[in-house]
Amino acid sequence: MKYELYLLNNIHDSIDMVNVELDPFLDLIMRENHYDTICIKHVIINLANCCELLVKFRLEEEHWAFIFSDMNKASFESYKNGDFVSVDFKAGISRIQNIIGIKYDFSACKHIYQYRNNLMHYTLNNTFECILKDISGAMCEIVEFINNEIVNLLPTEATEDFAESMNEYIKNAKGIDETVKKLH
Image (cartoon, rainbow, N blue to C red; front, side, top):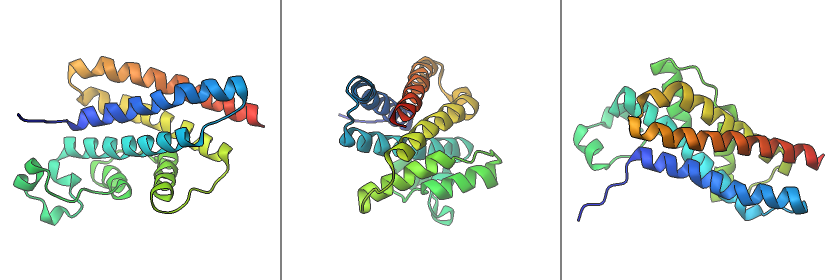
């Protein structure tokens, strides 16, 4: 029995996991002024994953070799088998900007990716307000990038699912912004 989980599914799952984590988080902090640090950890990890996968998806749409870390080692056989080292997030952004010519800064997404690296490899140390602002900012950057650079590349059956998830991102980003105001 063959098992396949496509890149688009992984992107959508990452988007939805952020929404799933944020719903109870925002409810708890608004009602009881209490927050769950583990929840924020999972939001950061899933948000960073989403950012990275979106960059790779957009690169792959341009040409499959762009998702290889070392494009000189790109072979179609390795690509089809998934047996290669893929481009990292920062290099992927550089390729999107310099090769494809799409001018997105991804500044909040870069912060989220750094938070993810801190969480996975050392210690995350920043103010809660700053982390929340970056989460909200990254969610807005993702919505903008998807709406401007990804939606037109999606299969018709996926556009509705992505639109629903993006609406939740916008709602949750606003909830995060309200939370930050409440904390001051």
